[in-house]
Length: 229
Image (tube, rainbow, N blue to C red; front, side, top):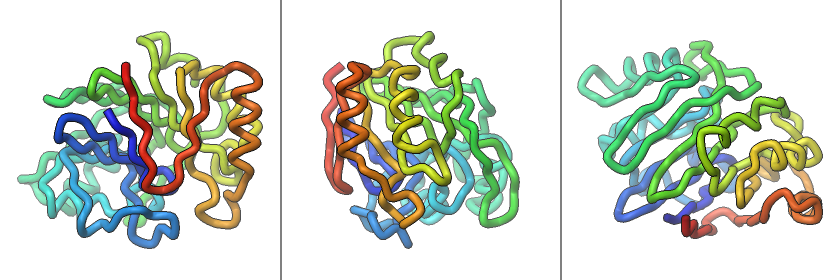
């Protein structure tokens, strides 16, 4: 399966003609590598409600018919916008949603979360199983010790880790996060989009790999990493 970096914290997970979008913030994203009016989706998964993650979810879901998965309070707001006929799943932390292509489980993340529409909810991480691979999108989070828990449920192929600081952990805490998470590969995210989150991604790669915690793949927006579980 392929992990395509769409910029900031947005990704497309692509396998066998299925596209799963995560946090599709494209419109207004200076690093976006895709147009919200053109991107395809068979499902949309959200970590939390901030505008740089919720992004174009409603517009893409309305156009493609893709089901949306979000923590319960955010899911209810999205369902209100999309209408009762649209498939919006509303798990809470610890909940798993199954699809024909795989599954997504919500995990804790230490971060705030309020939508542009004003609903307050809990930020989450996502453990996504697709194409035989298990991907851990940490969401927006600071460093905390429970990042070590998801791998207790099974081997993690790739972790998508924020490194930009200011709104999330910085690149130094993200080295510790790479150790705790224990994935084979780390793809850094949530950096260099705006001045407050600018950082040295190559220094992060060096520090993680020299410590032996993981292989770090730095993707430019539009770049793809292929996972072979």
